[in-house]
Image (cartoon, rainbow, N blue to C red; front, side):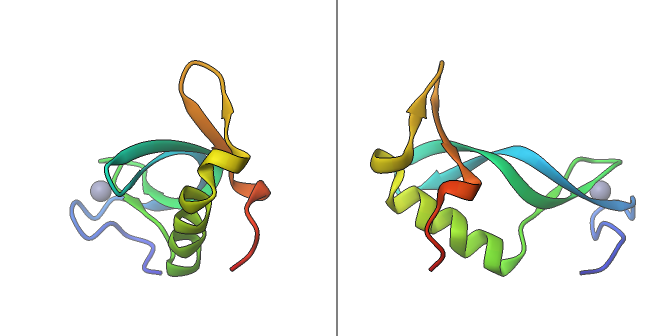
Length: 81
Ligand SMILES: [Zn+2]
């Protein structure tokens, strides 16, 4: 992963965030997702293995999701693909 943003050349930081993820026609929120994020424009990059896991979580969302004010799943609760 390059450590500068390809859009604005800001610095990319590795963080864990509450990620919004689109799957099929639903938007789900997943806590504690590791992501590269630009500290200037906020652009987010998921690594391929993380993205795959987000998809796995999305498929299992009705099993692992807990409800607060919106559907929320925990990244660490996903079964590794
Ligand atoms: Zn940027």
